[in-house]
Image (cartoon, rainbow, N blue to C red; front, side, top):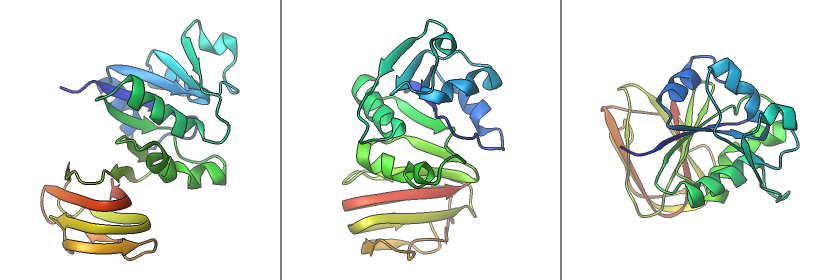
Length: 204
């Protein structure tokens, strides 16, 4: 079983209880700067704090190890996802605390997946986002009838999708709305991309 890692970002938590379920299954919990505030609500002990540390007072850290990630050209989420890839390689990473907050931060959530090259699953109100890695097939269990979306960043070539109302074979997608509102017709979908950056959304 893969090491399960939960990142607590500083935004709002989904209202459906997914954050608590992920917290109970996590082997390690990491706060992304101000995400430390969610620990008490979820009843979890934070193992580590990551970020530029401008939102965590020493008293809030409670003696926990804090890793300063100073690059101001990237968000704390993007930097933390990159840190996990380097220092927790092979771990399954879930992220909560991404809702609400500043508009620019909300708009940058999906971009953090692309920028960091992370395979993390970002859990937001109503569903999740994940990046489709180039070349490798992404197999995702879903409930039949689940609404899916493909969100290309720039030009994405060689898109293959199975298990949905509108399967795709070697399609080219471009930034736009063409990939929204597909529906799962089986208990598992398979998505593959040959070239380009593609984000998959799954309604919950």
